Structure formats: C-alpha cells, structure tokens
Length: 169
Image (cartoon, rainbow, N blue to C red; front, side, top):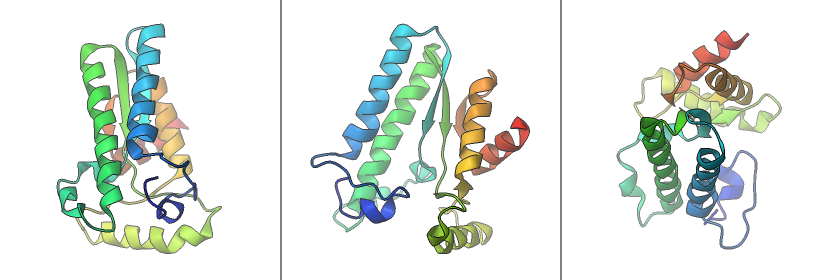
C-alpha cells in the first residue's frame, strides 16, 4: 500500500489499488466492521483483529523520512485499531481478541523460509524487537480458540498464540 515495496513486504504479494493507504485499508475498514458488529450484535461479541508484533515497538518514529517510512504508517494504523477495540472491550461493547504475529508463514511458500529462519534466529538470540514467526495454521487456530473461549481477550503474542493453538485440539 503506499509503496511499491508492498508487493515484496506482503506475504500475499498483493498489489494495492491506486490511492490505497494503510489508514484506509486497516483502520477505516476495521472501524467500520467494529461499528457494524456493535450496532447489530449482542454486547460482548468477540472481535478478532490481526495486528502486528511490531505494534509494540516504541522506536518507529525513527522511520520518518526513510525508505521504510511506510512501516510507521502501517504501525500507526494497527495501533489505532488496537486502541479502539480495547476501548470497546472496556465498555463491554465487544470482546477484543488482538493477535500480534510478526512474520506469518506456511510450508506452501518455501521462498519465505530464509526470512522465517532469520526471525527465528533473532528471536532465539534474544533480540528484543524480533518475535518468532507463526504459521498461518497457528494463527488461525489461536483466533478460533479465542473466539470460542469467553475468557480469552486482549493482546496475544506469539507464545500465547502457540499455546491457544495447541489447546484447540
């Protein structure tokens, strides 16, 4: 979105429409969906949002004016959704389930394995800003578990997603 790099950075290789921004695609779309569920659903319905592990970073302002400035806009949009969903959870309007994966991968895409391996290594070395990648299956099972389990809410990191995924079956 906002950058031709999305074709590379996006795991899906998507090519966004002209004028598409992270604000429109992420924030506005999620806000519209949250409003629709809140208006037409029962109080406290679960609402799952796939955010990003990097949303916890506090140094992304350093990206301004650099070739990766798009990453800052991406994280701003993700955080805006997280904040609004958390507020709606505090009000009892929705039950927020916010999963924060970093790299999402599948064995069906072997081209991603060098990036996945680098992130796994960085995480194992204890780099504070590198989360372990999760598989698409782990992410999906964690979301299903979170929706099915009324006690689950809030922000879930890769460790919590893995635990939720394992407990589903």
